[in-house]
Image: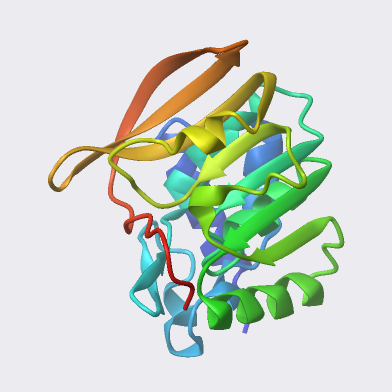
Length: 212
């Protein structure tokens, strides 16, 4: 079954919603999102909606993936990017085609294994998947040009901000109040972190502590 027509419709939707970066659009069009969802949901793989991937987690809607990616690319060049919350692996796969190296942290072992299998099948060799608590970041590989957090917290863990390079960008969903989240882009200038608030969103929570 070919999904190219569905991908083209998805791209039309993304452009209508304001995504303009040509490289982001090209990668979104060529990446097989249907591989990152349950086989029973593959026919919905290019709908602009979040879909369940098991373990209470979801794959983000294509618009959010494109928006977060486009925001990070405003701060190129990006040699190293850290993703907190691998999930299905789709966001890491998109980033891997646009930046030098992607490090991605996941606390659910089975999701990490599934993501690794798909990413390897696509020949994306610049992705390093780690099984760890995302609240800790990845200090042994820091500092990073950019950090993307794909789960929501009441505040951004300070340890993540300190793993940014000078001038680096972190984008994350923040829970402003119960059931209300917004994306925030944070730029590091020494020990000063400048925030820019973006779209309202809905992400699963960033869970600290025990791995699963």
